[in-house]
Length: 445
Image (cartoon, rainbow, N blue to C red; front, side):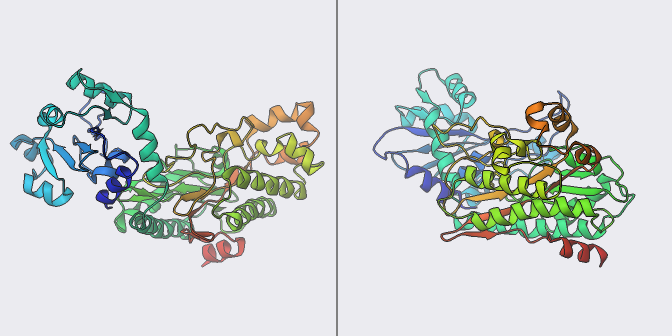
């Protein structure tokens, strides 16, 4: 990705007459509980966005007056080379990252004193404290930079979108291969291994998030990560997983029967979720508010559940009483980018809606061209939500208790696509079968 373009984009938001600087500290290697076990390194997203460096222990300063990029690199010795590999020369670092000025880490104070900034913009309190520890004479501020970078990252450049298309292309392959291979008796971790293999085979090495590989009733656990259940004939399998390309994530969910054929109930519930997905995608365009898309999906879900005999009563009254949240307890989607749940969902001053289900919506703003979002409706039969509701007089009158109790072992269905908002609608990056006939045909083949 072009970090120089991102820096230019960020600098345009600041007054170039001021003598302030922007400081960011990159990530360090993390270890497990005080041992020498290293977690796989992945750069902090904002630093990667502005510096283009996916290596530990780097820092950067951006001079607001001149626009010059100062990069600070760690000094590596022979022992580092012995244990961790080749040590880059300063010329190699310059060729890779194109800083205007390259320094060693211990030169930070000297450089800052030479620049004499009236104000140092930091990303957060932790980085502000780091600067204050370097020298208490500096004045630091933490709010402006976070808001500015968030604004920049919300609207993707063409180069960012190309990376996301490539991540999506490979994610589509991996999802399809699991759909082809899964069968009764397989363990969730076996299906996960197939998924991971095809990501790695195609050059993606870093999971974008902890994937969800859930069979049977585990598919109703929203963030299930144990992956040790044996999947049985007649159960559904839900896979919500993706890898990243140079930091940029793909995040796709599919749900299908492990034996390749939907039962009557599975097909009925699945089709309701698919209708909510497809209609939401049709409505996704610039100017649309994400909360309106969410509530529209909730209405489709309730109508579908009513048609399936799961709920009963007046649709408007059920919406008013938030009955949808008993079956669809999470938000419809989120921003996607350098983080799977990417920044910018709630602009400054915008609060969450205090209402069941939608309070967990991760984006509450009008959509704009260049944004990338997920659309991921779902229906789940979660005893922890439904059993209390069946005993609640206000809610139980809308619920078909006998039908719901028979579905406690059903699990859940979620279907998720990734969309780029375009000038006149959206571009769907996800190309994995989702129509019932397509899924069954693919699994039988």
